[in-house]
Structure formats: C-alpha cells, structure tokens
Length: 635
Ligand code: 6R9
Image (cartoon, rainbow, N blue to C red):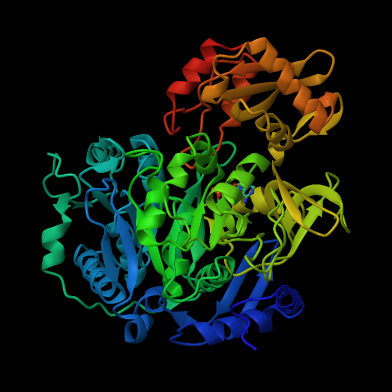
C-alpha cells in the first residue's frame, strides 16, 4: 500500500493509526518511496524532548534541490514549475518549466559560489515576490548555504537585526518592488540597514523596477551580468539529513525575533507529504498560495512542498486590491487555478467588497480552498465556502506554525467532513495533546486546553539559531516532554480540533476565562461589522474588563454608534453570555497588524489600558498610522 496519497476517511484512520503506532516504519516508508537519497539513513528517528534534540533520517545524505528539480527533469522537464503573475496585469505572466528552473537555479548557485559562498554560510534574501526569490532559496540549497529570507516589507532596522543575528555575509535584493500602485525603494532600505551590518561583504541586486539606485563600490553587484556568464549546471552539494536548510525569523511575544532553524531531510519529507495530501494535488493541477515567501507558508507551500511533488506553483507579485478587488478571482480564472490557499484576513477584506468582484469571474476550476494564519471566523468561512467555493470546494483550515515547518491539524479535502472554524483532525503522524494549566493532559472529547504535541514529526524546527536555551524555554518547558504551541484549542464531541487563539490572549473576567476569538466571532456576526479585536483592561471589580476595537463595513458607517454598541453586546450575550459583554467599544478604521496579517494585541492592550508609553517598535507593522488614530480616539 502506498501511504502517500490518502483518498478515503477509512484510509486516513488506517494510515494515521500506523503513523502513531509505528512512526519509524511509517516515515521510513514514505521517505524510501518518494524521495531521492544519495545515501539512506541509519536511523529514522532519535529524540529527547528534554534536551531538546530531535533527529530524523540520521546518516542519510541528499540535496533538496535534486528532489525539487533534477528528479523531475526526465518526466516533467517541459512542465511548468512556476507561473509568475506580475503586479501589473498588463505585464505578461511567465511560465518557467522545470528544465528552465534547473538552469536558473544552477546559474545563481554558481554565481554565489563565485562570490565565495560556501556550505554552511548564511545568505540573506530580501526580495519581492518575483521568480528570483524562489530561485534564490533553491540556489542556496543547491550549494548547502543556509538561507534566511526576510520579508521585503520589513524595515531597515528589522532587516539589519536579522542579518546580524545569523551573521549573513551576502544579501540578495532588488532595485525596487511593485505593490499595487506603489513602487518601493527596496535597495534604499537595504543600504540603510547595512549601515549596521559590517559582516555583509556582498550585495547582489536583481533589476525589477529600473529605479535609479546607489551601487556601493566593491559591495554591490548587478546580478544579471553575473548570471549571463555562469554555467548552466551546478553539481549539488551533498548534505547530511540534519544539516540546516534555512533560518526563518518569527516574532516572539516579547524580545528579539527568534531564528527558527529547519533542517534538510525531515523538512523535505514533511512539506512534500503534507502538500500532496492537504491539497490533494494531482498532475496538471495549478496550485496557488497567496502568501509571501517571506513567511513559512511561502517557504513550505509555494516553494519546497509543491516543487518536491513536481507541481505547478503560482507566484503572485501584487496585492488583492490592485487594480481592483477582483484581482485574485481574475487570476484564478486566467490560470485556471485548482487549489487556492490564502489567509482569513484576506478573505474578510474581500468579503467586504461588492460581490460582483467575485461573481464576474469563472471560478469553476477551483477544487480545494485553504486557509491559514489565524482562526477563521464563521462568517468568513461561509463566504469563502459559498461565494468562492460554490459549496463544492472543501475548505481546508490548516493549523500550523513557523516552528512546525508544515501543516499539523487540517481536514483532508474530500476525505474529512469539514466544520466551520474547525481545523478538524490531526494530520498523519501528529499527536496533539490538550493540557490544563496544572500540566495535566485532558483526555477524551469535549475538553479545552493548551495545545501541545507529544511526539516529534519530521518538519519540526530543531533549534533557535544561536540560542538553544531559548528554544527549550519557549517550547519545551511549560509542559515537560511536550512541544507547547502557545495556542489554545478545544476538542469537540467527535474529536475535531478548533484553535481558540493564542493562550496569551485569554482574558480572565470576574474569574471566567474568555477567549478573544469566540467573542470576536460573535461580534463579526453583526451585519455592519467587518472586523474586530478584543483585549482586556484593568477593572476595579471584575479584575479585567473587555475592550473591543471594531471596524465597520461601509454600510454601518453612518449608523448611530450607541445603537451599534448595544446591538453588538446583544449578539455577544446571545452567543456567549452576558459575562462576555464589552465595557467599551471603539470604532476604528483599522487594526494594527503584522505584515503577516496578525493583529498586534499587545499594542491594543496597552492603549485600552491607557498606557501609551512604550508601545514598542511599530515600524514593522503593516499599518503603523492606525496606531495614532486609535490612540487619539481611545475611550
Ligand atoms: C503558518 C503560520 C502561527 C500562529 C499559530 C496560530 C495562528 C495559524 C491557524 C492559526 C487558527 C489556523 N494560526 N494557522 N490559528 N487557525 N488555521 O501562520 O505560521 O506565522 O508562525 O503563525 O498562527 O496562533 O500559533 P506563523
């Protein structure tokens, strides 16, 4: 039996049971049958969550780019690996075949080698969503260099902190980038950031916007002429299974960003296997994930997972609102996208628009709709399901994290019956546990607690770059011998999981634990509400009271605010109970969000508590200006 492509619920349970009872046999078989190894492993798994130390496929040797490119050349050489859809719809899309991808990755790998990059060196990649970005990741992997992608929306300070933390010697960037109607001076940001990075000796610059930029003598080089002189083939560096593949920074709730380290073999096996099953990808499908490669979702499910399966993966340079809010749906129609993977924040923004934007396009190619990054509220789920999926494209609400490398809890489309706002069942090989605050595991169904994982999986991060103690403290200390995700979850009567949000977002009001997500879900049910965020603020009697920030839809903007406040509290009372009613409701035009779309509750909490000092660095936010507006109108 091939365990690789699950097609029925019975099969899911069967394979799941095997993956839990005999994890080594299970993952050994998957690895054996579906990947290209230069040398097989001596040992499938060794682990110790106390140290913590986890090793998968120890002793094996491979190169991930041989798995993602070379091995497809014979059968899929002329198949499109990457479709590039530019920001400007007038600019022609590009179709890069596996054969062309091979050449371009090899050329860039050779350029990097010429610039002195060696196995184990760190390379920082700060590029917009253009093909060179995917090619840069793969070129590093080809020669065994460790890539550290920094999202090209981050500020100069954020960039330099990350470059210095992992001691990158070389940066790959571009002259500029396009985002909707704007053009951004990326190279200017790099120049500013590098003033604080003495370790960077070389900057390779891709030409994208033809902007007039400053090229620093001896440091900065245009990439194109170097590529033109580079060989079209590059022998792949043979890597050990546990050699680091990349570092990717994720923000902790406090302190400096954590450089999560992912290693080679386990990450390959896990991203490839999850991609195949969670999207039910079949040959000739066109798959599109709208994330930026600056985030883990892009690493795992735009680049490595899809390419390891010989898939066609679409990269979109632009934004959902340019030239208008129909752009996503226009792209789905144009490229006949079969699997579409996006974030709830995008879904909510699009659901707010005139329905004609979606209805004017032929979306009949869609077979699977994915959601990732935050809990998807009921209203957004239904809109996605009804308007985009026409009720016949299952939604896969995929829960996972930068740290987990790949999808952890998810329905398998056409296999697992879905349930709005539920990520449903653990993926094959994943053993979740819900823990109470005293550290006891909550067994059985209809329980709610802190979401932990009690057994290793191949895609997990192995450490935090340069700070193994922090890795242990953050993830393996709260609950001994378990990986702690930082999220809360409940398990319903049939064993489905629903992620309730970060446990640090739990607010205790009059001794009752209230999760922010369910209250927000309730508020969002109000027809005039577009989005909301709840935080706690100190209250004399209750300990904490609830403060709501609410964005209204256009239709609600002219309504009387006091009436709206009453109606919102009425809905909350109906959904959760009077205990969850909000003491204060501030209407606002936006919520402070990280570049990956997560609400910065820390800032909202401080403002609600009227503690305006020390809001922290707001420069890396998507919309720093909204912080001022919220401060000015605080209740
Ligand atoms: C892949 C990614 C991780 C955090 C995670 C959780 C939230 C992600 C979710 C979800 C509810 C989902 N999250 N997917 N919450 N339902 N389907 O987003 O990684 O950027 O590291 O964020 O995002 O809170 O802990 P990352």
